[in-house]
Image 1 (cartoon, rainbow, N blue to C red):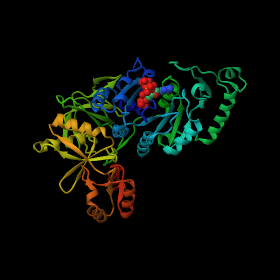
Image 2 (image 1 turned 90 degrees about the vertical axis):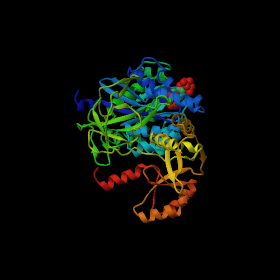
Image 3 (image 1 turned 120 degrees about the vertical axis):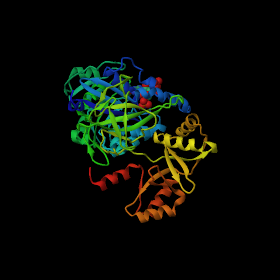
Image 4 (image 1 turned 180 degrees about the vertical axis):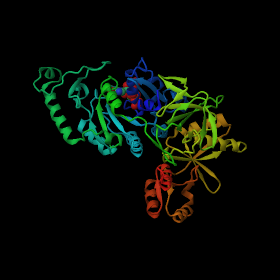
Length: 538
Ligand code: G4P
């Protein structure tokens, strides 16, 4: 097939949710529905189990297993679907945020009883930042949940996105009868535990229809029609353009566990979700249909086994055709590289591939040349942008416990932070190394890996900071004045961008007011964006 055809049949997306909303269950039901797996439990067994939260080694081991589910590729109705998995554990949230740089759309799962939760909010912030099209699946309708109007208003208010219901629930919890499909004007009846497509009852709005009365009861019928009319007034009608621009989210109600609401979700997804689109580089915009290959690394998976130092870099193909054994140009290092065993992930099996197309994610074995954000091309000097680092919430200083192994420690800290496990900031005087993460777990992982892979020993000294903000200013003079004046709370990231370390949100507010000419950023993507604007090429 030619590049254009391959491109048009690809859909690359992620399923995201606050832990426990049902992401794993939905992923599994989608794979079952698409025929990629045949037994329930295949995805679940790869999930980081809740009982293991205090045991980081166990979690890492499970993460090792979950390499297979990092990307799940399936062919369905002539389409090539790539589902990118995101870790549920909140300490790996940054991994999830970065994975979102490699997708063209997302399905957001919300628990009908809990509504919008902390991770839902954070994940949506990232989607908004990147204008990723979002579809919402309100799950667990078989349980007592919130009123649908309250839920949809909560989504609009908390997630700052307009919603357009595609289905409307009839009752909930033990009284959940099914959904009314607003597009096809038909009712899907809910039968708990049913694994095939639910039966379509009627294509009618006839209140007196005896079948309707039998199945859902008179009171439910009149309530449904009232609600459907009110919903049509209150919520936006669907517009593909608004969806594609990330302003409007189609909403579906269902129950992943009971396999209810999945076909409607999949069919709508296949008909409206975008195929791979263009991507920004610091130099120009790259279009997927360009003939020459380009792609970027968004995730590195290290092997915990010290005898096998190899790592797997996950690369998203952005344009052209990737081929096995062809020489590609690593634009950061300015050197050529060849990959003899690029991996793809069909139906949970890792296998070597000959070629890949835009939207595909491939695994490249690497011994330390690739880091997050790296670009590969056929020779053009491009640098993909928009692979952000997020403000860490826990900051600790690295204390060397074995002065004879200083070099090993330096190397280890550099490499592990290149993998995206944590962020490194350097503070002067004395080259103090500060590690920033979103979760405590990473400190245990870093300590363990420094010892086992690099032979270095360290401790972490807690620091009284709760946030790191990247600093930029059009007025260089004012910026260096601030850096001098607040030296004790200033550090520099790996690319030498200054960072302000805030002791509390209150202090941050005061400091911002004291330096109105300086901009404080929660992600490190902003200054890349400024570069693009100043280059004026995209
Ligand atoms: P996550 O990946 O978002 O963390 O969620 P996951 O799918 O693991 O689901 C979390 C819990 O919610 C699981 O129960 C799962 O069975 C349940 N669940 C998912 N979808 C539905 C649904 O539609 N209705 C109901 N009632 N429950 C649902 P668990 O007891 O925590 O795990 P397990 O013992 O079932 O594996």
